[in-house]
Image (tube, rainbow, N blue to C red; front, top):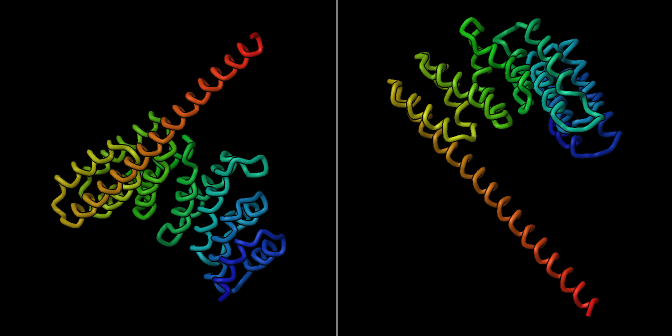
Length: 263
């Protein structure tokens, strides 16, 4: 019940609701604290950032609560407002987590990777994620970083998108099942047809039928993503054309009015 209440409080734009959520961060049940963190992440204010940053700095009895908080501060930092924390500050916080918070199954540091992936236009966040795709990285954290490449790819520049594609193409050549699954998951989030080529190459080389099936499904997702992007682009072009026509009509009308006054 308290978990459900936390979710509902996030929809109420009142100071009392925020205060109630802050109180919930001290709940004895980790499931409730995790739900409160999720609720605070949707509010996206400087105050909610400060509350979640405190968990990231001080820790929590539950690794999952810490991970949720680390992911949330990355999400909040991406909101454009002078009242919000800058992306640079959030990256520094998450960088600290990645350096210092090794723990069971890399849950907390994977949360930090998730937070970095939310900063989709940041090259610094991308560079950090790429660093943790290296072979020497603990497996759970490495797999999280590989999957995060797909998330962050949708806001990166063309040059950095190529870097992501190149890295995923390299990773796709590895034979470990979980690495291949993570590569497929990353590519399936992307919005470029170049991801399809890597997916098909992976499907052709892997002997694992499960990976081939997942790669085929990911190709369909990318095709839908690219199709949606093309549709939006077409609508924008049509809107620009309508605006241009309106401007031409307005100019003609003004000319006619000017001639009428002269007559």
